[in-house]
Length: 115
Image (tube, rainbow, N blue to C red; front, side, top):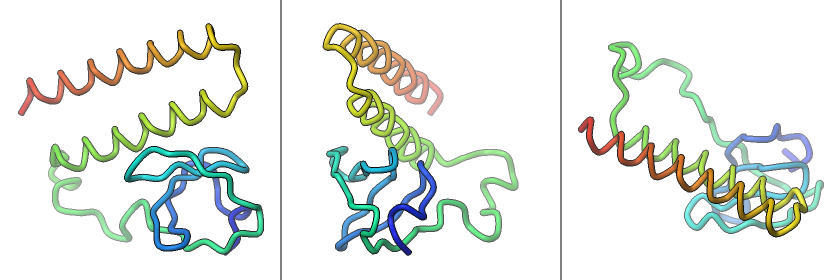
């Protein structure tokens, strides 16, 4: 599959590394949150973001904390990447990053208090 064929937000591998597509030209590395420009023609391997069958935890109504934390970190990094890629002025970008960082910390604190 080619990079341009993958929907935004989907997970994939490229040159042995895992990424999330954040917009039509940028991907975010899952391990570091670093952004990388990818040509539309880059050959990528999509990753299944949802299993074909529901895991037992999803059926029972509870999500393991590890999975919730991984999903949150993926979302958090994608939000920061989206802000960076928008070309906002420094003051606006900083204000948005501060709000996202505060929401991120609030989520982490909520998760810790419910374990």
